Amino acid sequence: MLSARTGNGQLFILSADMPRSQLKQLRASERFFCPECGSALQLKVGDIVIPHFAHFQEAHCTSAFSEGESAEHVNGKQQLYRFLCNLDFQVVMEPLLPALSQRPDLLVQHLKTLTPIEFQCSRISQALMEERTKGYQKAGMEPIWILHTPAKLSKLPLGVNVFRFSKFEEQFFTTPNYEHPFLLTYNTYTQTFHYYSNLLPVDGERYIGVHTKLPITYQCYPFALPKSPAPSMLTEYLSCYVQLRDHYIRSRIQYNRQGIHHPFLRCCYELRIPPVLLPNWIGVPVQTKRAFRVHDCEWQLCLLYELAQKGVAFNEVSATQLEHFCRRYGGEPEDQIIACRKYFALLMENGIHSFQNHVELGENKILRLISERFLAKRV
Image (tube, rainbow, N blue to C red; front, top):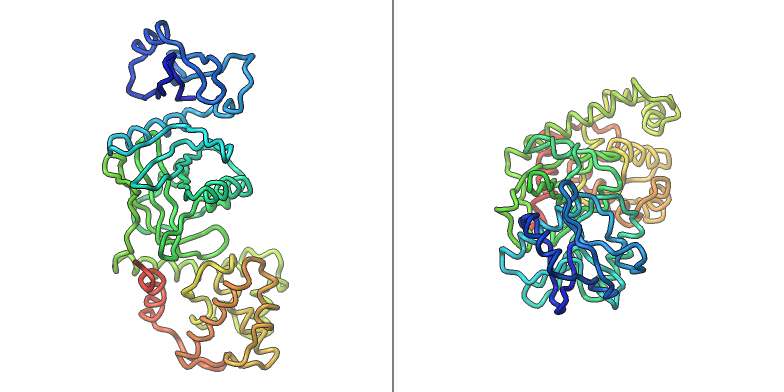
């Protein structure tokens, strides 16, 4: 715990810049109490562990959950607290919200809006994270979740990269007024914010995106939002996307353990199309939310194969048929159906109505598809 009440009832916050010698003198002259249960607290000031408050062993208090936090979490709360105070915002550390039975790491007042900030350094289940978020939202507050920068991501070079995010890390994606999510993290060791933005999903856990850094001394509040990728970056997106598409196709041939039973290879076999000779309009980015977790090559080829088997034209396919097709992939059927419709529109716009059309989309066309994802609905 980093906050306590003094003997006269004032709230006292432990700051990282307080000398340990000063805290030891304060410990000898002042008494501290828990802001929640009112019981006495110990001010622990050692040579290794970060100075903090702790209940005595016999105390029973629901705020004890905050004791035993990692050094990264304690440092992060202190650094973010000092950062917000330096910007002259009203901020409270570890406040108890009795109506919610929740205690955010920080509570910031900006104009008339209260915003809880949760700095997460340990794993939290998606169910618990959603439960806490809904609790704040019911009270009229929109929380900000900031993940401690994972080591595997902090070491990546700046600029356009291919990222691999676990499902746990995807929980922290932020989607502002425009539809493209980004991941905001904070590194307590370097006191730097890391942004992973303009994310273009590829397959599974992989995304193409932009990595940028912002030292805390240059950060603002509300937190800065990432910019749209520059034209030169979009060219890098295209290069990455084409390489990953080629890698997906070749890996299905070389490393696939399902053989002909793999959905992608099965469709190629039935359609008598060698995988490496697939037209480049199979496996293109569609301007929509992430609907399918498999590669674009797979769901688009399987969709076209199913229509070919049933003799259904692109403009005649029904919502029921699309819903039946999407059911095998899990996820959100509405988003998947939208993705299918947009894919059909793209094909027909380019005069493609069946596999017999020997049309290739030029690189400029695919580059435009990527550009539209980030520019069409940007505020």
